[in-house]
Amino acid sequence: MNPQLKLLLIWMLNALALLAVASFVPGITVASFTDALIAAFCLGLVNALIRPLLLLLTLPVTMLTLGLFIFVINGLLFWFVGSELKGFVVDSFWHGVLGALLYSIFSWALSSAAAQLIRKHEVSND
Image (cartoon, rainbow, N blue to C red; front, side, top):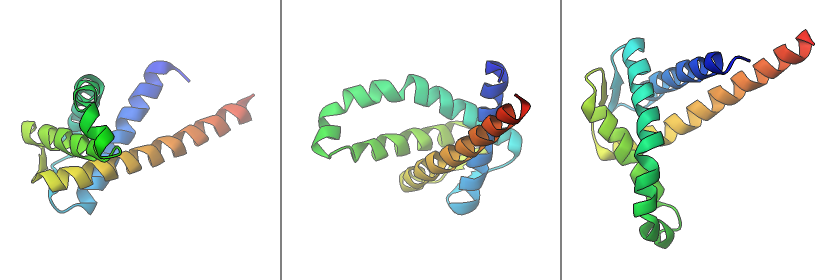
């Protein structure tokens, strides 16, 4: 599969995962699919650029809590993106923690399902 097409598919699936999270968590709202696309893009940037630095800086605390502090970091970043965008709102830190957890699960499930479908399609075309 074309790498650009794969990236676009993952971006769309992450936007769908964000819409699913908003339907499950009452403290998270997404105004439209366009806002979900923007939020998914921003979450991807934040997770790629800021999260590794925060994980490195908080490594001692993360080790003391046996990795549980990563939930705090994920929740804070999710809440941060929700506070910066108009169409994506995260009401509180705890909604951010739950939203980040569900977003990870939904995104993983959708990406795994899409990867299996792509593999089946590629095998059947060979």
